[in-house]
Image 1 (spheres, rainbow, N blue to C red):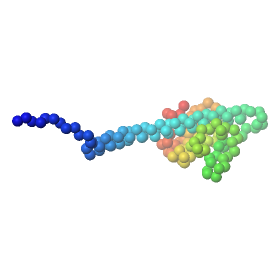
Image 2 (cartoon, one colour):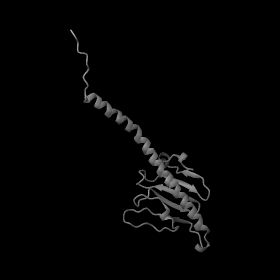
Image 3 (cartoon, rainbow, N blue to C red):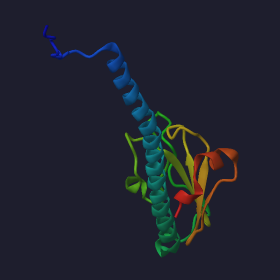
Image 4 (cartoon, helix red, strand yellow):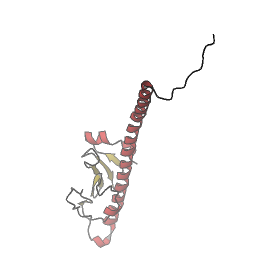
Amino acid sequence: MTENKTVEKKSKFSLIELLMIIMIVGIVFTLIIPLRNDRIIQEKMKEAVKNVQIIARADIAFMEDPANGFYIFEHNVLIMDKGDGNNGDDLLNIQGKLEKIADVFYFDYSVTDSTVVATTNKNFGKEGAAFYYYLPNGPWGVGSDKVSQNTFDPNWLP
């Protein structure tokens, strides 16, 4: 008596193998998505810091320009487009230098004689959080309110 010891190859996945593959892919995505979201938030913060630096330099140049004749103590650099298509006056002529996505800014910026403040708008996801830069040489800081403290990591700022 000879026994047939050949093993036949299956060419189809079983249901358990398919479920295991789906589970592994799901685990990988649950690890990758939060890292990607953190990176996106960090990129938005870097963009906002760069914009604040642009505003700070333009504000100092505006103050030191003798053609202005005076220094505006407090002014809004950019007023967020609320949907009616009208932006505020750009006194420092820096609106074209600011980073924007689809004509919507993630931060609203305001400048006084000593501080530049970037406040998140609803497009960032958390409205009202703020960070600031003291003119002309810093330091950087995060707003003291709870929303600002929970939104921004002070280690991201220069």
